[in-house]
Image (cartoon, rainbow, N blue to C red; front, side, top):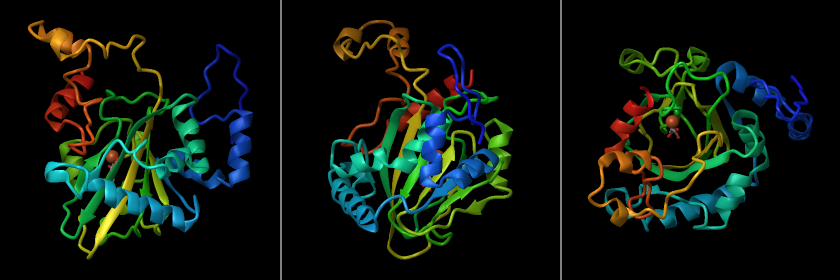
Length: 282
Ligand SMILES: O=C(O)CCC(=O)C(=O)O
Ligand SMILES: [Fe+2]
């Protein structure tokens, strides 16, 4: 482990640790997780909590997914923080918080806390890098970290996460051909209660679910604080924007998908996704 004590104006190099964070890594026995994250772009956190915690998370997800309206009812539950106390335990988990600081720095922001429920026949999710709103080449400092709290065993027929180890080293998004080929992809197989975690650059997706029953997962994404706006214009509502140039709505972030998730819909406004990803790459 590379340990550095940065001065107030110095930047900690990628993958370097402050003394305080190194001590937490040692106390929790996470050295191999950090090594795998650096070398392969992902890792699996095990024994993160008693199994009863995972059972409580699964129960809460299934219950809250019934409050989702429309086509995602019973399939998705979004904006989970504040909807059941167990989700505070999820985002505060000690091992997860070590990786969050390591990969997204101190002051990292909770970007998304959303559950998915995938039944038999659920189709595969195509390969992508989660830094989908960061242009390539990706910066040396990782931008985003995603963890999946597996509430059911992860196996390939069960529709586990698919990852291409070391693809984070490309520092770019996969091309359509690379997505189709998925060369070198493996299933992240692990028992219920584990947390597969990956950086913002590694290429990943998931396998179709062929097994009976449902795969319940809580997706937890944190991001660096860097690009949050200095000023907050949430008070300038739709009424204020009415009749004004579209560009004003764009610069207030109302036309991209970030911040568009609602509890009722159960996911973000996907009609805004193509523009968001295209604009981010210009
Ligand atoms: O559902 C999965 O296994 C992976 C989903 C995914 O790509 C993500 O949460 O970033
Ligand atoms: Fe993803």
